[in-house]
Structures are given as C-alpha cells and as structure tokens.
Image (tube, rainbow, N blue to C red; front, side, top):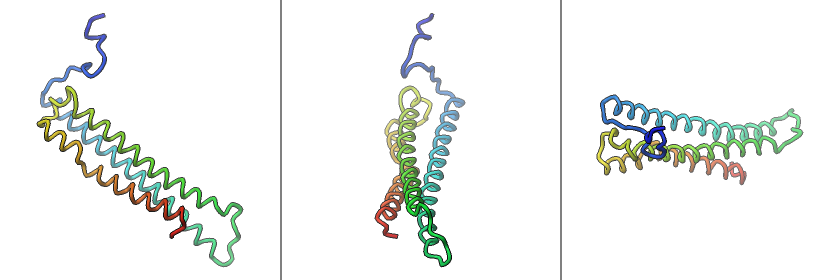
Length: 152
C-alpha cells in the first residue's frame, strides 16, 4: 500500500488549476444553488399547503348543510405540522448550503475557484439565496404562530 493511498482528510485529492477543473467547480457551485432553490420550493409548498388546509377546513365548517367532522382538530394539527416541516426544511437547507459552500471555497479547492481569498469570503457569506431563505423562515414562523394562536 503506497503512502498516497492511505492518506485521508482534506488533502486526499490532487487539485490542479486547469480550465477543466475551474469550470467543473463552477458547475458544482451552480448545482448547489439549484439544490438550494429546490429546498426553497419544497418548503414554500409545505408552508403554503399547511396554511391553506387550516383556512379551507375552518371556512368549510361554517358552510350550511355540512356535517361536523369526526376529528375537528385534525386539519389544524396537520396544517401546523406542514408549516413546521417547511420551516425545518429551510433550516436544514441553510445548514447544508453553508457547509457545502465552505467546503467548496476552502482547502485545496480555493486554487480552482479563481478568486482572491477576500472575495471568496465575501461571495461565500453573502448570497441572495440565503437572504430569501431567512425571509421565508420569518414568513413561515409568522404563519405558524398565526395558525397556532388562531389570528387568521
């Protein structure tokens, strides 16, 4: 067994700064953005469906001629669970995104990123996707507490 095959840790890859590796890095970075946007779509759907289920079933109970539900609290709890799942998905997505961005900007991959270290730090920490995610977490929390406290 050679010494290079027993190495583990951050230096386990040989990174050569070529145009192929640079564009591969860019494709990976853009793939990360697409993954984050998929998380956002899923979380928004969960929050939206949760809120809509609560609103729909509360309004439906007031229609004349409808029977009372066997479990009248079920839509309420399902809606809260869906909203909470959406918020949790957003929190997990931020954690995954930040971890992967730090991995891509750090170590031996910084040579193929094609930017200075100051710019890498700035670009890695200031992303519009993170700002949108934080905004959606706030909206999700508002929806959760609005349903929980029956404000709407």
